[in-house]
Amino acid sequence: MVFQQYQGVLQPRIQGNVRFFIKRLGAPSGEVGRPIDERKAAALGKPPGGSKKRPKMDRDKKNPTLADAGVDKHLADRGREQRRTASTPLARSRKAVLYAFGPTPARAQNAPRPLQGDEQMNADQHLLSLLSRETVDTRVNSPVRGVIGTLRPVLMQWANNYLAGLAPTGSFAKGTAIRSGTDIDLFLSLRSDTPNTLKEIYTTLANAMQGAGYMPQKQNVSINVRVGAYDVDLVPAKRQDNQSSDHSLYRRKADAWTKTNVAKHIATVRAGGRLSETRILKLWRNQKSLEFPSFYLELTVIDCATRNSAPYPSA
Image (cartoon, rainbow, N blue to C red; front, top):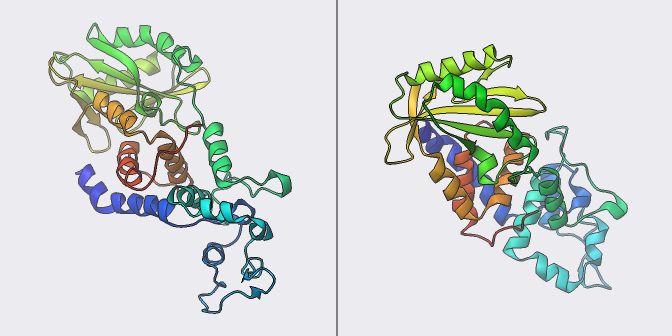
């Protein structure tokens, strides 16, 4: 049911924005604070308001005077090679993402501010700066992985010898994590012969964390706890059998269960080669205060972006 709702409502919305990022030319960094309709009109070489009137011609340059069209004057000084390069699909997609992240009044307060003077960046530099700012350390010796050792004794006691595996999952394991999200997700794999029901597994885990001195926050399929300086989402699940990596999860909001295979999820996203694009779209999702599963966003980005341009470089 959740996936059907996603297909009918969320998927077209995500795909529409991904196509927008890829096909539309966004505003340069010097004008990202201007109203959306004015910026669109400027990018298309038209005056705001939908008028058919074209910008004045500069008789010396034999080209439209971009400043008269409402575009920052530095664009008028670009060379022919720069304009040719900027017209490629990949360059347009990168500029469009910059355009989408401009801090208009409707944007989040923490949106990137317009750059001034020597600070002005091109679209690639700006996107790479965003990716660098939101980088999460996922290395083997990353400090955040230390929470596994901290929580293991409590989790072993709770699972009563039925704990088959404890490993990072979600965005952390896929390489699509952003700093403004949860620091790490931990997948708690219980053996298929665990006697408790899925609801009992979820409830007893929350009670065990509270008994150990943590302050668990029940979410949908996970339980969030604060371990030192890190936010950790615990995802308890029971293996469906011993031959596959399929698991059953308890969905608290629906009081039902769902099937998942996190190993396949991680492999699919990593093989898709769209980690940077996914991270940018996650920032867009958070700015818009949209709520839908990250895995659906990751699959949609892979599906849409792969057909339009080469992968964006990593930060």
